[in-house]
Image (cartoon, rainbow, N blue to C red; front, side, top):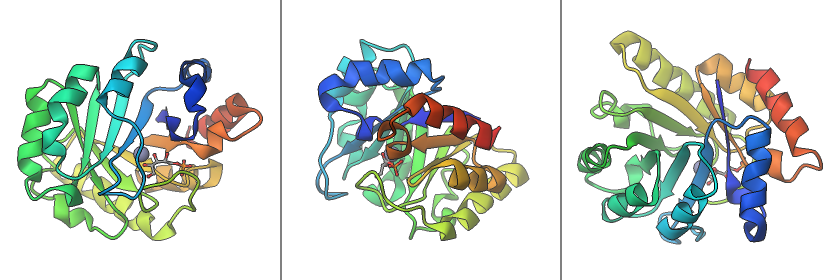
Length: 216
Ligand code: DX5
Ligand code: ZN
């Protein structure tokens, strides 16, 4: 089980400090939410920010691209030091090509699905990816409520993984707290992204410990 704190809810003026904080709490990945103002309404970080983050941590950078035409940005994010690049199946007509591009850069490839998109839409790329990200909220903002209907999709991703012998990790993202993390774990998830639950707490390390306990 892996914990991937999302720096979307960190203090951007103190990003290094907030990354150290979750390192101390035993983070496995740093989850970096890249938003372009088109695929999702919000705008966040670009590849230069990823390069800056790369210079202050050795933890794997789990870059979640919520951008249209991700094919135009893969090389930049890989060069910036991303370890995992996850793209949305809804974001391009050329999802297979994008995954090839990611792998060509020597980076782990992830594929994400919005709550309204079936796991079946991933069927022809599942054998290629290292990670399947089942969105448990509609992407765009931190601090939203977990959508329980997505649990069935985690189960489906896990079922296909076991049936076909695939090796991808199943990541969940959005509204993850103790209770929802436990439900996702039971459905088959193994990587847990949490933003506001950790960063808006008075005691973030305590929250990380609670999350780890919940998915143990
Ligand atoms: C949502 C992002 C998430 C976000 C999760 O679009 O992909 O990674 O940071 O935030 P919480 O954990 O607050 O729901
Ligand atoms: Zn994310």
